Length: 181
Image 1 (cartoon, rainbow, N blue to C red):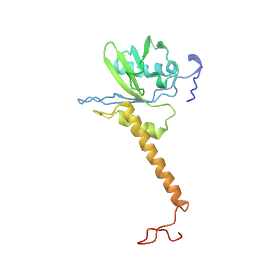
Image 2: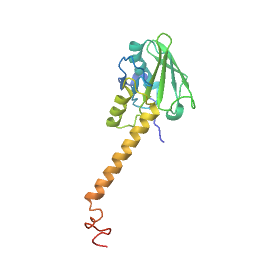
Image 3: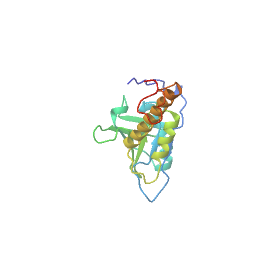
Image 4: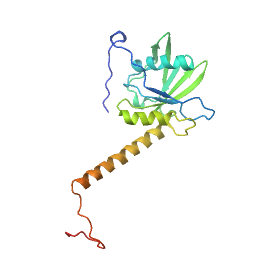
């Protein structure tokens, strides 16, 4: 896997709003509190915009935890508006497709992290699925479902292309062999 990290300084880039989908308030808890679709795999660049939105909604985010499987560089601290977020990483204990956010005053939230290279259509499906109240699907479970659905769509497309390109000759009625064999 090739990863590119943009080394542009903070004052050289305009912050982009985070691509985020949150679970509506529900009496039925689920395994995820929503989904986040970052634009890159650079936590120093991506976390400030995310915490700006979530601080206003959930209270000051003080800690973030990731699995290093999909993050090439994990800083210990990320400066955000008005404070610093401490970043930790866990390999075996944390789902590689999940971001855990902690606030001393308001608790914990788990977000599906959609890879930056994901297509807009797939990201929309994943964001909707992760924000379903009461869902018992894990972050890796959602990603596996999307991969399986994509593979099935690709297989159908290949089969349709085969059929439209001529494909095998149709079988004769009541026969086990093709007419040309």
